[in-house]
Length: 152
Image 1: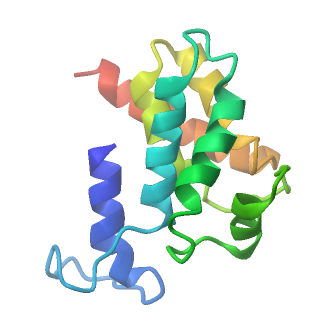
Image 2: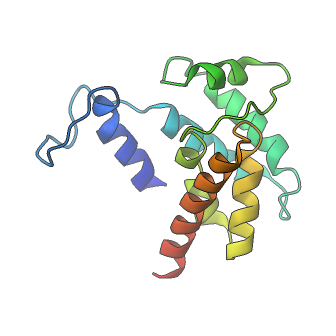
């Protein structure tokens, strides 16, 4: 998770201005945490407060993502996700951008086996980004993190 958040902050100044060179200052005054860091922390919070079987993870993810996300309304959410954060009863909206994959690092860290990684990834993804390709992208990210953890 720390690597994901550090990478998000370091790369934030390039979010709208691509930089292809590997030569750049690591951190500058123009770096900031984006929506990806904010939602990564919210998903981690949801996992920590969920029951051992994670039967309440989807509900907790919505609550945590909205509670944390509303404190940072201008951190870079896409238009539909920004609305989702502020809806009283948020529903999935068939998004297939990269938002869900950017927030699942805690899933890969918390899961104890490959199947649990996939299940938890789906639970925190489909609450907002329910397009099949988005679900696959988030799952692939969480699985990669899980494998990095178990290979250590």
